Each structure stands twice: as C-alpha cells, then as structure tokens.
Length: 270
Ligand code: IPD
Ligand code: CA
Ligand code: CA
Image 1 (cartoon, rainbow, N blue to C red):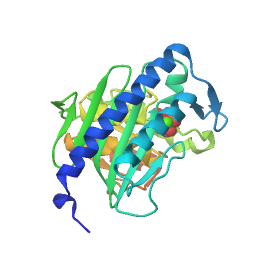
Image 2: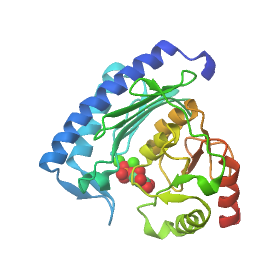
Image 3: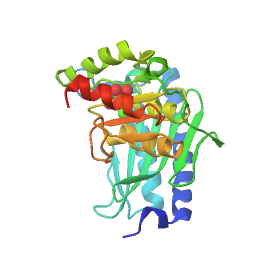
Image 4: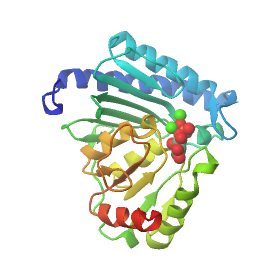
C-alpha cells in the first residue's frame, strides 16, 4: 500500500479537476432547480431529499466512474462504485438540503477522495456564492484558486463557532447541551445548516471552530482535508485523531482546539 506522502499527485490533480468540473455542472442543475422549484420527498420525518439532489448525485457519480471505474464510491443518495480498493469517493450532492428546499442560498456540493481511510482530495462548492474550495494532501487549500488559512483567534470568548443537529431528534440531547455550553463560553454560535460549509469556513477563517456529532463522512470529509491543508486541527470531539468512519468531527484554527475539546469534555463528562 502507498503511504500518503508517496501518493500519485498527478492522479489527485486529475481527480480534483474532475470534481471541480462535476461540482460546477451540478451547480447548474441546482441553480435552475432553486429558481423553478424541485420536488421534495421525505427520507424521514424532517429529513428531505429533492429531485435536484438525486439528479446531481447521478451526474457526479457517473462522471467519476467514467474516469475512475475501479474506485469505490459512496453517495448520500445511494450511488456506489467498485466493491474493493484503496480509493473511495464520498459525495454529498447537496449539503444543506433543508436550506435549499426553503430557497436559502447556503448549500454546497461536497466531493472527497479518500485513500485507505484518509481524505486526500476535497472539493466543496458553494453554489449560490460561486465559491469553489479545493485541497489536495500536502498542496495547500484554496478558495477560487487563492490560498486560504485559518483564523488567528486564541480566546474562546472571542471565537465564533458553529455546529449542527441530527435529523434524529432523539439523538440531539448532547448537541443541545453543547449548544448551551458554547453559547455561554464562546463569543457566539451559529447553526447555518450545511456542515461542508461549516468546515470550509473554519478553513478560511470565517469561523474559528465547528463540531458536530453525529455526522456522516460525506458531509465533512472533503471539508476535513481542506481544513487540514489550511492549517486547522481536525479531531473527534474528545480530541482523539479523526477517522473518516467516526460519525463525529471537531475542527478549529488549532490555537483554540484544546479550549474547545476541554469544554466539550466537561459538558459531556467524557
Ligand atoms: C445536513 C447538514 C446539516 C447538518 C446535518 C447534515 P444534508 O446535511 O450538513 O448542517 O447539521 O447533520 O445531515 O442533509 O443537508 O445533506
Ligand atoms: Ca449533508
Ligand atoms: Ca445531502
């Protein structure tokens, strides 16, 4: 098995360029759908999927598999690729579907390429704002081609944070406790409704930290590599190393990480 440092950069650049093109093409579908409306279906009581999610995932997954037929692939709406292999794509065709269904201009296409459990290439496209966030392991993180970096804030009391809440309302008790604790101790908290954008906003310094549990890997894995490449620290909520199969993530500018993890631990008595 290759180590990450010896990965084929040419393959990762090809993968990034493909992901950027497919995210832009999905964005065309999504801008048209938000103008004209897109049928909404319910996956659960409050968990939505629109026709635009399904059409976007089909476009992205078929585009990837045409170029990388031997790669594994997991799409939120059910797309799958090869059965085995070290490379796996993780696709969230619309992260922020509830915003999208309510015509709020805050949602994204998220595409990650994982190698043996580690995110190595990520693209997050904020369709309404036309902001393309990209990263390849070891090569830095970019917003519309310009390098980005995390904030320099060192005090939790001056820090702007974000989180989100599971569609399973019965799994929200910890998240509500953390929301309250951080609302007391941070400068302010946001719940903007698109985890992929929360992650890349940490990467570019618009947020100082973000955490969420439970969360799926298609929501945050592209954001995780973009964050890391922008200088962020990315772990589990208890501060242990983030694994792509953990259903939780905590990202910060690094300077605030210990303060964030300490408050999470105190609140959850971990
Ligand atoms: C959701 C959003 C939301 C987060 C949820 C996710 P979806 O993804 O990222 O911000 O709080 O946990 O499931 O359903 O809009 O793709
Ligand atoms: Ca999502
Ligand atoms: Ca989604």
